[in-house]
Length: 202
Image (cartoon, rainbow, N blue to C red; front, top):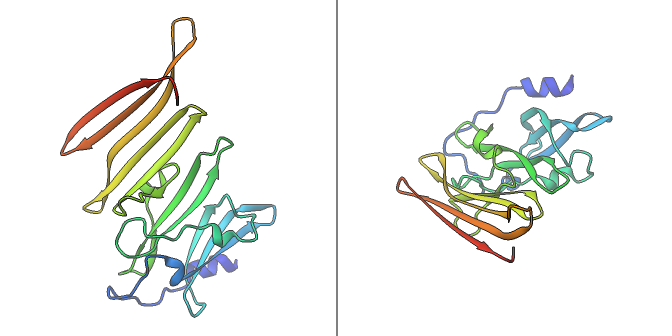
């Protein structure tokens, strides 16, 4: 009941000139509120400003670290779209093999709100590209030697894939392993270029 009321509470007026930080934890506190003790990984995220006032509640979320005593510390609040404002990304599920599914919210300073972003949320193993903060990367595994990675960059407010990389084991007609196929695909100026290489080592 309390969470519902918080979700309906009016949000303070914000202006487009509102200052923000590349890490949203400098501006806000993120508090995980489990739905029930029996379901600690399902619930809501209460977002409070520096004065402790609730400014937004993200209802009906699934959070892998919801049963942790330091749940808030496991939320990633860096700037994922390179607009100077910290965003909110948290793990919704982590598979046994290590693949991480995330839920992403981008901060919109003009509205003073965190808004769900479907494309970012769809990138497994989401991270910011350390070589270029205008881009993000993804990483996933289908097995110990079955790997896929990709790189996306922001263009006019949209994510555009610029590179894909995969490694997959190859076998001969009898099913014996032959090599590891490395495939790199780059997208530039509307052109697609693919390079492959088979190696004995992963």
